[in-house]
Amino acid sequence: MIDFPTGVWRKATGAARNLRLSSAQDLVNRTLAQHGLAPGGPDASAPPAEASGPAGLPAALAAMLARKPKGGAAAPAATPAGASFAEGSFTCAAGTRSYRAYVPASAKDGVAGLVVMLHGCTQTPEDFAAGTGMNPLAETHRLVILYPQQSRGHNAQSCWNWFSKGDQRRDRGEPSILAGMTREAVARHSVPADKVFVAGLSAGAAMAVILGETYPDLYSAVGAHSGLPMGAASDVPSAFAAMAGQGGVAPATGPAMRTIIFHGSADATVHPSNGEKIAQHALDRGPRQSLQTEDKGNAGGRSFRRSRVLGEGGTDLVEHWVVEGMGHAWSGGQPSGSYTDAQGPDASAEMIRFFLGGAKT
Image (cartoon, rainbow, N blue to C red; front, side):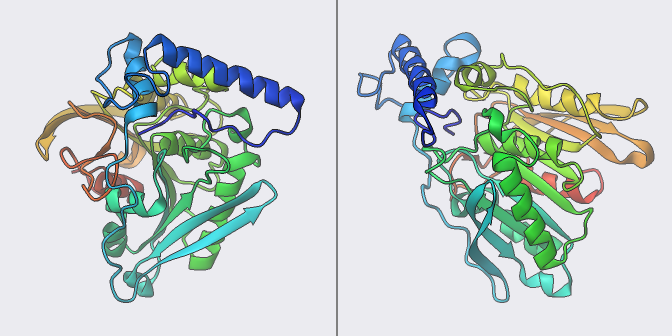
C-alpha cells in the first residue's frame, strides 16, 4: 500500500504555493536518496524490504517506489441477479468525486444500513470491493456499500489527502465531499439515520477516522484498518513521521465515536502504534465507566490479540485487533484484490458485526 503522497501535488494557485510544494518535493527526493531509493537508482525496481530503519521508515519509502498492488484493476465477483454495482458522481462546493454503489438484491426487503468504504492508495473501488469481499456481506445484511473514488487529479497515487490541513475539517475539502456523498446515498436508499458507517484501509482508514471526528452526527461507527489517527500529520514532512509512528494526535473533543481497529504487527508501511493511537483517542472521548476485556485467538492461520471496551448494556465502544505477523494488508481479504492477506480474522465480517451491534464472536 503506497500511503504517502509522493507527486500528489494539487494544481498550483500561486507562486507561493508552487514554492512550498517544490520545497516539499525536494525534501521527499532527499529522503529517498538518503536511503538509496532515488527514482531510477539501483533499488528502484527492488521489492520492498522489511523495516530496516527507525520505526520502519525505509520500508515505507521503498514501497512508494517499488511495490505494485496485486490484482491491479481487480473486479468483485459477478453481481447477482437483482443487485447493482453502479457508477455515479457527486459534486458540491468543495469538488467532485466519482463512486461505485453496491445495492444488494436483498435491499428489496428494506435497507438495513450503509457502509462507506474508502480505498487505500493506488486502489480503485472495484479493486477494494474485490479484496474486502464487502459486497457478499451486503447481500447477507441488506447493506448498501458506497465506494468513493479518489481522483488522480487530486492525488497522483489515488490517496485520500489525510495529511492535508484543508482536508481535516468539517465542511471543507474531501470530508465535505465524502459527507455530502454519504447524505445523498442515505436519502436515495432510505437508510436508517443510526446505521451509517465508514471504514477504510491505510490512507482510506485515516480519512475514515477524520470523517468520524468531523461528522459524528452522520456516522455511527468507524472501521480503521492499517490507518492513522486524527491529527497525525498536517503536511508532507509530518506525514513521513506519522507513518513511522512518530506522529501526533488531535485533542480529544466532541462525542465518543464507536471504533473498530485492525492492524498487522508486522506492518512496515504504517507503524502499528498508529492503531493504538486511534484506539486511545476513541477511548479518551468515551464514558468514564466502562469494562475492558482482553483475549487472544487464532483465525485463518494467524494469531491475534483483541482488546474490547464495553459501555453500558454491553455495547462495544472500541475494539482493537492486532494480527500477529501480518503486514500492510486487509486481514482475511480475498486474493483477487490488492493489499490483502487471506490469513487472519475476517476484518470485513468483524467490522459489519461491530457496526450492527452483533454478538461477540
